[in-house]
Amino acid sequence: MTNQFVPPIEIEEQLEDNMKIITTIFSPALSDIGILLAGENYYEQAKQVAIQVYLLGNEKGKWFIQGELQAFIFSSFSSAQRFIDNLPSMSALDLMLIMSGYGSKSHHPIFFQ
Image 1 (tube, rainbow, N blue to C red):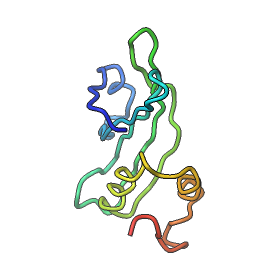
Image 2 (spheres, rainbow, N blue to C red):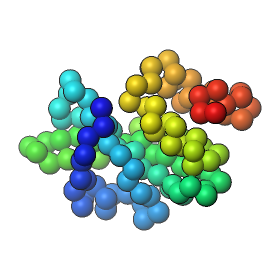
Image 3 (tube, helix red, strand yellow):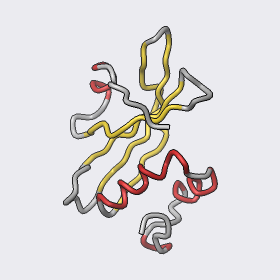
């Protein structure tokens, strides 16, 4: 489930200058855990887009980045956007296949065509 979340300035300061916060995803079961997605070269004409996935934690009402979970590289903006759109409903199996590189050019990109 994606929420309208305005990240505190401390979170934005933890990201590299070229990273743009794209969205956040929160679990309905765990109110103090979230996922933040940030992108590099995240614009429509980009030939290669990097998506960083960060784990967010909340202590005493204050959100912070606990760590980076995974980075993904996509050959186009539209592929990155499809990944982001599909991530909240993606099965664990699909995510593990993507994390292993399945779906890259060498494996016929089945997930984001």
